[in-house]
Image 1 (tube, rainbow, N blue to C red):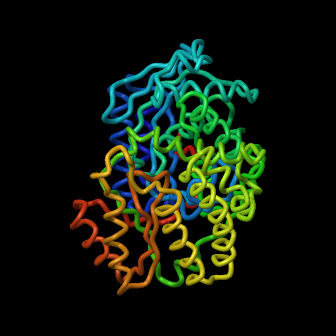
Image 2: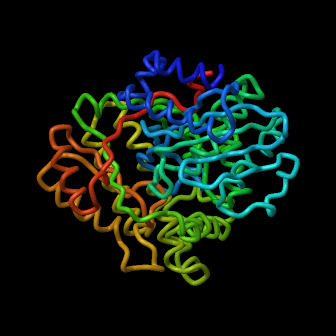
Length: 426
């Protein structure tokens, strides 16, 4: 479909077929028409193009378990990246993201991770391309314009969503959509690990690629067990999902984030394992003197968090499936305390005066003393967002409270998105 035809289709109501993704179809239609127009300004009018969408994700429970082959519950959310893309014959990916300078990746030079700046979008693009080739899939050049509601540093996985988007485009333009969502997530994780230099697990990419509300067991990361568990119980009880963006960014905290899997894995290595999966708390207690002397107290505390958090995820899944919201919230609250006290990812020790997450948790704790719900740190931590489950009738009051501290628009009222990476039009 040409860019001209895309704009006409959008004006004629093409998004009405995607009401499950977009409650505000009128606003999203304007957003996509604007994106197509921006593509045309950058690359020319009349090109054959498609519109793609990839959601951000919400980590419900399972804080920093994925990189040690643990279990998590995550969900795709109704904030997405959209991309307008057109294939080219140059073997080059040219990309322009709203608010950023244009970038170019030559696919013939993309197989060397050291050729790209760490934590850059070009590194993610190159890594996805190499991942496709390693898995026996076709690659090719394309021109793309992106605009995103999955904001960098907001804790809803901007890097994972972007990597999945590049794979989503490559999948449809050059592989007829044959690459499945799980494989797309695995390729995206490879890109983040090897090229972007973020030692993350598979949770973020899976939630973005698959969509919906999912339990993910990463004991075998090459063949993760994924189970849709639904969120009907929460909706029936009248709870909404809120993320509070504290305004502090993850952008300069990659070292803090990397310290968590690193310390967990050195404890595992001392115990003779590759990761902490399968470790019992009794084993940590028995080896505690050796771990403390060799690796320090924080590493041991983070290992304790992993073991207990993995158990909490299983209990939370069972509670959701049974419709036991109170039991589910009990696990959410325990997860939050463990992250703050044992995992210690609520603020960075590099700047202890900046504790937006601590403040957000404190205010939410005060709010919850007179209202029903649960809350915890969200995502990688150290900065970014907290997660809260709030009754619908209390949501306006909660938003007013949190926005009063962190600024208007800081609190996002969200819903779970049923689909992951897709081609919308074209």
